[in-house]
Every structure is written in C-alpha cells, then in structure tokens.
Length: 374
Image (cartoon, rainbow, N blue to C red):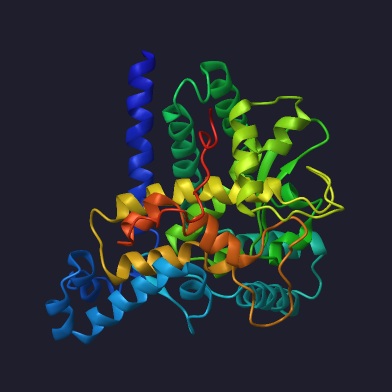
C-alpha cells in the first residue's frame, strides 16, 4: 500500500471517528438539537429578527458578552449547559457516582478481594461504549495535532522539527483499563476525575483517564479540549527541554506568553520547575487551536446557541468548583480567567465562530509561533 493511500485511509477513519463522536455515542444528549437548529439570528446578526424572538435576542446578548469576557460566560452561568453532544458536570458529581458504584460492589460482594472489586468497578465504568467515545476523541485529537504541526510554515518549523513533534505525539498512547492491572499502581484513579499525561522513568509516555471523568464529561468539545491539552504535554517546551531539544519557534512563543502576562512572573519562578506555568500555558494554547478546529467543523451544521454552548462546554471544567473541595492549581496552571478568556477565548478561530469583532488596535496580541519575529 502506498503512503498516499495510507494517509487517505487514515483521514477517512478519523473523519468517521468524529461523526461517531457526536452522533452515535451520545444520542441521548441530542434532545434539544431540533429547537437549536431553528435559531439562525445569531449567525445573521439581524436585529429585526432577534427582536421578534426573545430567545434569539438572548443568544445574541450572551454571545456579545462572550466576546468581551468568555470566562464570565463560561463560569458565571448557573446550572448545566447542554450542547448538542452533551454536557459537563462538576468534578464532584462524577466522583460521587464512581464512589457509589464502588460501595455498591463492596456491599453486594463482601467476601471479594480488593482486586476483584476493582475488576468489577472497571467493568461497570470503563464500558466498551464509553471507551469508544473517549478513544474516538483521542484519535481525532492525535490526527488533528499532527495536521496542525504539518501546516506550520517551513521557516517556523522545519521538516526535522515537525517529524520530532509528530513522533512524540504518536508515541503517547491513551491508556485506560481494562485490564484492571493497567492502573494497579494507581487504583484510586478508578474513582477520580483526573486525566493526565505521564512520562515514565524509561522515557515512555502515556495518557491516563480517571473513571469519574466518564460521568463528568459528556460533551464532545470538552473531550477534545481535555485530550488535546494532555497530549500537547508530549510536545510542550519542558518535555522538549528534558530531551535537550530547543526550537526557535518555541522561544518566540514563550517570549510572547511572558510579555502578554499569560505566565505569572514570580521572583521564585524556576522555568520548567517550581512556580512555573509555561508547560500548562502551552498545553492550553494547543488545546485552543485543536478545539477551534472541532468548533469550525461543527459550525457547518450548527449555529447560534448550539455553537455558544459547545464553546462554553469546551472549557467548563476549568472554572473554580462550586463545592469548595478543590482549589485551582495556580502554581503550575494560569488562573481560570486567563485560561478561558485570554488563551482559549482570544483564539482567532474561536472568536470568528462566535461572531466576535476583530480585536481593537493596541489590544493584547494572540500569541503564535511567529510573533515578535524580526
């Protein structure tokens, strides 16, 4: 089989995975789609049309607010936001549901060992249907990151640099159970909401996903943002530094992050060490690029409130949690306001999809690999 055929078949498979991602694996979440599709006032920005329909007028006002401050739209909105693919619940909700299953198994089988309990818990949480949905998002993200790398101009990333980055992405598999012994070293993950990138002592890398996340995130766009953020760590500046690799494009991007205040300038900051937000800022920035691609494809079919809800759900879990049980990790992560409004919310494609006006002259720039180049 020729390389071109392989690429074509891969693209077809990934496209099919995208369709499965928000059509097959979440049909129960599409109950509002028909009413959403009937609203086109937001896309047309027709004030007369909006005046006739209070729902459309409300959507326009909400979208304008999102253009000014996406963080407020995402995090200060009460209740659960449902886009046509699903919703995003608070972290604590997913963990309570996972723990309830765990306790039910123990009560029904008091004579079982902890290994047997974990095996049954995995069967109930990591079902083939749930795994397929997560894996379809991961495969789409992996493919889209590679294509995004390929699209960079040669004077930004040369062919060898692109090859290195793509190899890093390909060698970072998603690693969910079963079997149960996959998480034998971290069994608490089965009831946690954590999704994270990990580099092992032998240099191998992987993504792990806690069982509670399956209950927390039903939105395709949240899956995409989360998978893109974690997979981006495979190519973040600190991981490349660990490989003793330095890329000029990354240096330009880092300088822009610092200049724009996306990375907190602290006296005790140690780059890629204590109190440094470089790695997480980069991962958010890449996740914004990839989620923007998902929203752009989605916009071919949906518009208005559906698009706004999709953009909202993409980063809904970055907000401060209402239960107060967890606090935002601002040692390594930027504050939620910066992550949602200034990194994701200022992505030019995201703003265009939401119908936002171009930024005013003199306003804070959006960082790219090419910023501040002479």
